[in-house]
Image 1 (tube, rainbow, N blue to C red):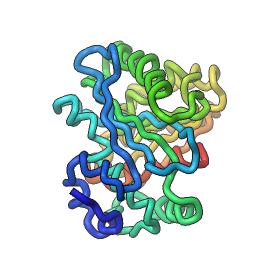
Image 2 (image 1 turned 180 degrees about the vertical axis):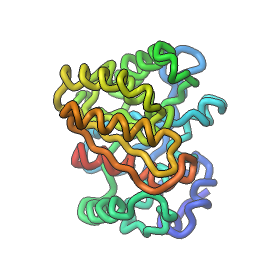
Image 3 (image 1 turned 90 degrees about the vertical axis):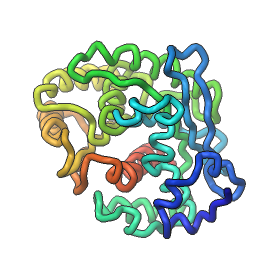
Image 4 (image 1 turned 60 degrees about the vertical axis):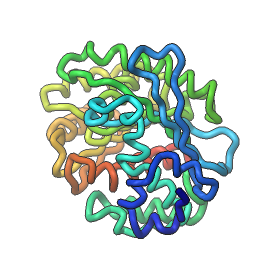
Amino acid sequence: MRIDRRSILKAVPAWLAASAQAATDSRTGWIVEEYHVKRAPAPLGPVVVLRPRKARKKKLPLVIALHGRGETAKLPRQGAFGWPTDYGLRAWLEAATVAPVSDEFLSGVGDPRVLAKANARWGDHGAPDLCFVCPYYTDVEVHRPDDARPLMEYLAERVVPWARATLPVEPSPERTAIDGVSLGGYLALRTACAYPKSFHSLGGIQPAMNRADVPAWRRRFERAFAENPRLELRLLTSDGDFFQDGVDTLHKALVAEGLKHRYARVHGPHDYRFNRTFGSLALIDFHEEVFGS
């Protein structure tokens, strides 16, 4: 199957329905690769990588992007394609190569000012030079904090070193990020708080948290910022987000503690529609801005 990149701007659903193999076509601007992390605990291991075919730099910033809970119920290989295919990240990255991207891509979700800012950046410098690593992971119970520890260790101690040894990425914590949506946002923030010196930017897109969880989160971030004051944190929620109250409360708690971070509440639901529109844009925009890519 061959894909005309400009047709992406007119038919997002057709792009999202395309097979992963299509992304290896020589006319696309982004390469999709599948890997298996060696010695990964079963059933972990499948990792999907998105990187530009013709990057401006030989070494790219590394962004670990974690899918939501829905993908944990899928087969590992299918779940690993959450961000690249099901959430439309690949479509957004391809669209960035032929910017400007129309507001129609947002389908009325999110903040069009973010897209305008991104379009200006893409028009000046081209598509972002970022390498996205999307590992599959299994379900965890957010109300039992210890449940996440094996996955946090896997991500920080297996996936990140593997990516640095295998992919054309900069092997530096200052050029490494972790982010995710919903349950993936919870896991990304937990991992970065436990390994603050391993990352520079961290984000949670509609991260799974409730108001009752906020005191524990505040303590985690206090410790993380004490260890690494240069951390760049972004919290994103929406008016239709199940976890809006928890994210809003955490934002206020971090402000009260004087912990610098970015926060936004936009319009949109907590579902695949959000992920495919503003969620993927927000993932790209934040880390591209932080790394100047």
